[in-house]
Image (cartoon, rainbow, N blue to C red; front, side):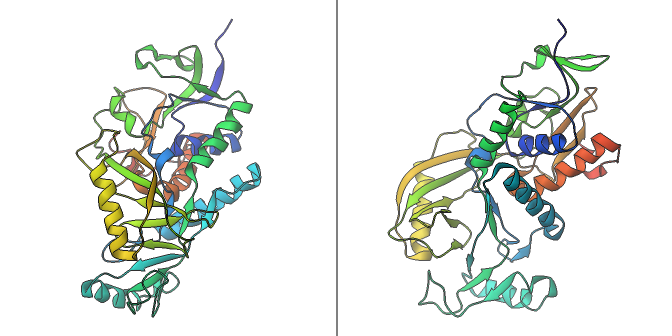
Length: 347
């Protein structure tokens, strides 16, 4: 009996693997997604924030105007398919913490590209006693990434296109038909393994700069009027209850999956300092972000392995950027359209 054959074998069902699989199916391609159900997947922990203005200097997120329409369109399409939206608009209040930031703010408010994104307020529902200490950042949104992954898994399972499997790299072989591994034949294999790519023998030397992040699920005394950001962020739940998520840090050295009590305390202290709110922790989660040294993802054919591709390295902005890059890779795979060299150079 011959082994089952698919067009694309996708390794990893995080945000990257899920969105890529759905895009390939929309183009009529057969896929099989295998996932080892590994803890520490950043997609399972992430708050899913899409933020058009970030950083101390209130910089426009790189290529936001390019990424946003594609991401928004993808999430709308997924909601029609599943009957449940995983993407919601969020009212964001951003603390202006000191005079140096006021200088940047005044500059941004004069620039045309920021006119629809920033507005100044005389008060804030969080910090009403501090006039002009807050701005509102428009076009902020959040993706419920755990639900998106669950929805995608259900779709794939119903089609027989999903398997809980730990890939044995040594079993993988190149054949005249493409790739054969663990009883499956595929024309092409695509690695979407997130931070676990450091264990992949064909990807282990890529210039990742992994970052551990910790997020608290908390309860506050009353429903929140919106999201507050000040370097850290407080994101209210979608159901307008008094539950929220609080995060996050970047740890470039401790890449263990153990929650850190010190980080939890720092987040709670910072929250109280910048909002006046006190909170009770209901959960403490960690994840490892697959960030890269050059702040660009790794997308394209793997030179050392025939019929194999990488789709990885999206870091903390994956909810915004992955739909765009999934389209880009799908066009390449189905039409031969070249990928930008900046995405392929390390592969």
